[in-house]
Length: 321
Image (tube, rainbow, N blue to C red; front, side, top):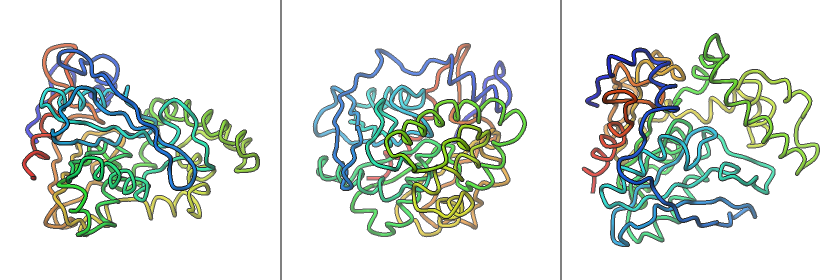
């Protein structure tokens, strides 16, 4: 990736926090969305937002959002702006419980939810009538890569190419990193401020599902995943979840073009945990710029804009057809 961070915004924390709060997310008018609600095979639902106004025969980009993300996330808006400028269609599936309404089933979503990703992609492929391109931000990127790994050569029937952006590919390393110091104080607290109330609403839906009193006192994502994410999704505990859901150990199994983008100063993803060239297959391209923060990559004069990263990711995806 060709990226140089602006001099006025140094460091991984600044390049993460400022873009999420202040930088310009779109060029021209903000994206408009059209929502579809899909019933899932297990009796639940998900909501999928489609970028309004794209031609029916245009290429389709599918974007999977990150932890507690949605169509209002700064990265979702930036990708939608780039897709709109190119005349592409774009679909943004919301993971269960992230579209503004609590889902019905006694489950939520997680970093290794590749079966859900596969079901979504196959349905979009059928609607679109030809293979699509897909990208995933943070948690969504890890889940997307896990799908590509599990699907192997069959993935080519559904997707032309995939990309992950700032994804925690080694969940144990990232979980430990975000649970310490400034990261715990700022980022972990922000996530838990929405995740714990949402989980407690799930407990009201399904009494006895987990220990609500212990969850109320969780202060790290590891504790949350031990009490909620792991047991609700078939994992023994958080370490088992992290081991089985991480994409990094299986990157050599990917059989379609895959771009793996991680800034080396990402506060969520320690640089030592990033995959090296000898750990990935021939179809995997690694982009590891020194700067950018976590899903930041701001550019331009203050307050900056967020279009450089999605433009380059979409350029890469477009080369595969």
